[in-house]
Amino acid sequence: MKSTSIDYLPILLQIIVVGGFVMFVLFITQFLGPRLHSKKKDSNWECGIESVGDARFPVSVRYFMTAILFVLFDVEVIFFYPYAVNFKALELEGLFAVILFVAFFLIGFFYVLKKGALEWEK
Image (tube, rainbow, N blue to C red; front, side, top):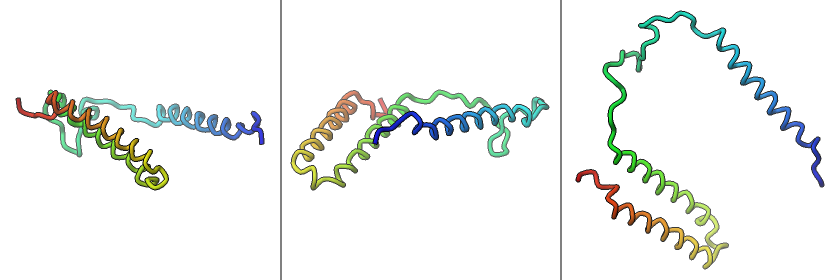
């Protein structure tokens, strides 16, 4: 069966309705929002406790490197799931693909170790 442009009409209508709703909400919040401003009212509060000091303090780059590497190697595990589900159907060719996949990540991991990205104290 060949699709025509009329088949996409429900999607177009949904986009129009959603866009209209978003515009309506953005417009109406201007009228429903608070109008009075004061120093006390506009100050930042965290869990009902008044904030003390500056929230912007230097954080070590090593912390961010560790977080990024964790996400990178954590996402790698997600790619093992399709292989685990279909390992019988993939047979030897699938096994070689997974071995190659793991080899690429191991090369990257050893590179990270060699560069010292996981060493906290220097």
